[in-house]
Image (cartoon, rainbow over all chains, first blue to last red; front, side, top):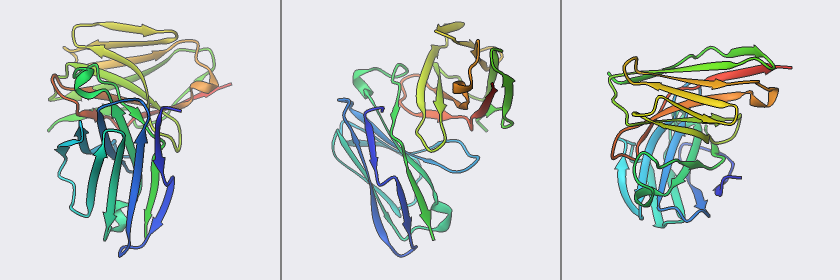
Length: 117
Length: 112
């Protein structure tokens, strides 16, 4: 295990539902990330948090709302999603500023497989 | 436009042979390049990092090269084993950035 856990592992939701994905890291890292991985496409960075502050929002639609209450926990709140949002959502963490850019390798969780009906 | 290309076709090799995977990029000047392994249904796992001023990096049976002139990285697995079968992702990191940009990955199949 990488020290990054994600729940739930699988989620099926309707377009009108509201749900949340949870990520927790036990590595003492300072930076956390949300990625989207669709079939046959590269990993797409969605959000970056460094020391609980959002430093990157990669033009993500507002139906995805991140929350980082502390450096160990990251949430992704979902509402009124579209079928094309079905994908594997991956959380990652890294040392962040403490590790220095470039040397900052990322540790990924197992992902949440999301299906939007 | 900026692009990272990895061979989308699976690489199928015999156990014991050397696997070589390619990562090409255009319109980037990365300071660092990383390789990750991803198994089905799981998140990527970091393997190796190489800096722009390094030509080659090794770790056990793994070797990575980085040619900033050709804008290419090669990833080699020597004495390949069926357990090496997975998808391998390359990722670029710009200087002073935490934003990893990933390729689509190449699937490696090692036949016993």
